[in-house]
Image 1 (cartoon, rainbow, N blue to C red):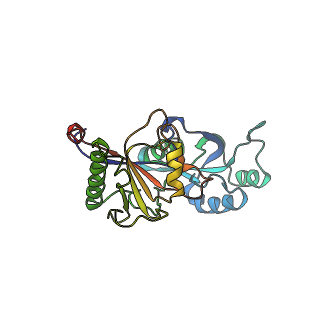
Image 2 (image 1 turned 90 degrees about the vertical axis):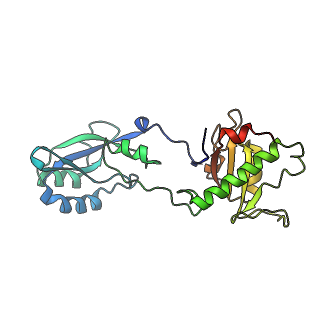
Length: 260
């Protein structure tokens, strides 16, 4: 590793793009001139309540530059003949517009990454909304912020390599603006960032939850007991009353090879 990098560790582990869970839906080709009318009616009689990320209409360009539209009529039944299980309102609409239904697969869950979204759209188009957490860094760091992160992580590594690191072990705690906490050590660390050399275990990660830490940066994963990505993802545990953002900082080899 020759350069510094900051990687966001998401709340939930990503699903391999080609292994995303799917459900069956009943769709049909439609005449584009009826698209708006059909979609409005279908949203009334057969809303996709649990699949809001799935787009109702699929557009495909065919030979001659023409546009081919398909629409999801409803979800398919899990039991029995799927086409015969359609509700009466949908069947009436299908008969009125002389639609020819077919079964298609759509992804069951909203994409967590652009890669997942691109794979989903190979089956049927979906919407993708990047994370919009109100925590700096989730959607990227400015150059100034990146340099501040690198500076504090470098300092944390130097402390860990020094002979008196136990004496100063809590000095790598910073507030959201980057100033050190040497002069004022609050009871709770609301709004503060924590810089760790190693990914913490469950016990230490929970202690940071109780302290209301805002962001955690660590340099090295803990493959045996890591609580923030390697084994568990405590930051994605919905039952907790506080959540912090987690980042891994990739450290250049020359920093690691220097004497403490």
